[in-house]
Image (cartoon, rainbow, N blue to C red):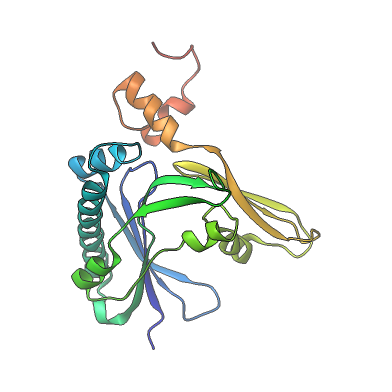
Length: 226
C-alpha cells in the first residue's frame, strides 16, 4: 500500500496555502516536494471577516469552505505535477481547514474551535481520500486543539536526557515543551500572538501585507513608523 501523503496548511495569518508531499515508508518521513499559492483576495477577505460576528454567517461560511477546498485542490494538482506523481499513488490528504474561531476551555469549560473546511468536496476534486477534523477531539479532552504538533516535535527533536522547548511562530504562536524527566514529558499550548499581529502592523504602517524577507526586523531601529 502507498505510503505517500499530502499535507495542506493555511494558517491564521492567511498568507497562503502550503502543500507538501511526503513518503512515510521509513521511520522518518521524507519530503518529496512542496509548493504554495496565495489565497484569492476575495476569499481571503471573506475568511478574515468570518473571524468576527457578521451577517448570514452560516451561509457565508459554507461558501467560503467550498472556495477554500477549490484552492486546496488546485495546490494539490500543482504539487502532483511538479513531483510527477499520480493522484492514485497518494494514500490520503491531511487538511484541517481554516481556523476562524478558536476559544478552547472558555464559556462552558469546554469551549470550541471552528475550522472552515469541505473535505468531501476536496476528495471529489482530487480523487484522493481526505483526513480532516483534527482539532475538536483534543478540545473536547481539555486540550487547546493542536494534538499533532507536540508528538511531531518529540519525534524530530526529542532527546532522552535533555529538556527542550520548540517555538512555532505561526499566525498564533505555540510552544512544545519536551521534558523527559517530567510526569508528562510532552506538553504543548498556545503562548501568544505571532504573524497575525505582525502582518497587521506591517499593513497599517507600511502598506505591505507582511515583512518580506524580514527587512524591517533587521533594519536599524529609529523608532516605530507613524
